[in-house]
Length: 222
Image (tube, rainbow, N blue to C red; front, side, top):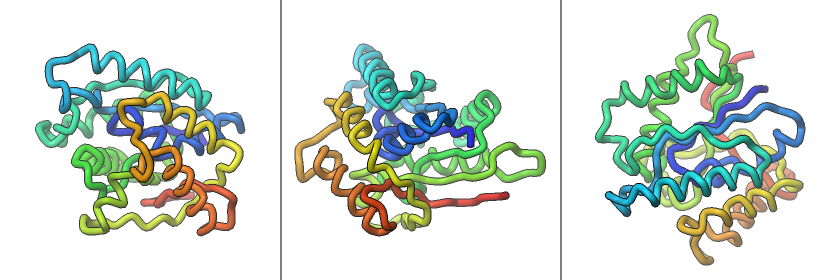
């Protein structure tokens, strides 16, 4: 299926689905990446150079996965709640119109990060399964240090029901994440290389694979 990954920030596309993206590209599937937020100005409010550096980093991370450069929409970092939801929905609708995906991957709605939660809400709204729609399936992914650190207190809790075997491409995810030096952390932080590999091994053990990425299918139509 032609796939569109909609992430809130640079690095979320790798954390949530990097190994699956690499696998699908190897299999000849068309995969596009879209990053809604610029990912930097909540920490460096006036430093536009930081935004440019992060975009270049995301392009290199995509290259390591085998993907084309992401589409950057430049929404304000960790301030999606300062925008009308309709504006975010319309941005997502434009992406859907442009890329015409059959499968859409995005954030889980119960994440700790407000931008993740609003991205989910906007994508879910934009993808109302109306007659004639091209999208056949919507899945959400987990983001280390945001999904599990909500401790299931924000509804809905993440309940994975779809697992993609990624033992052959897990290292490419880890290599892509190394590009994001400003976002990676040392073990035992969940975004450390060791913790990301451990999560993939755990998801694999849950699903009978050596390594896996987990997703929750929100809706699907045959």
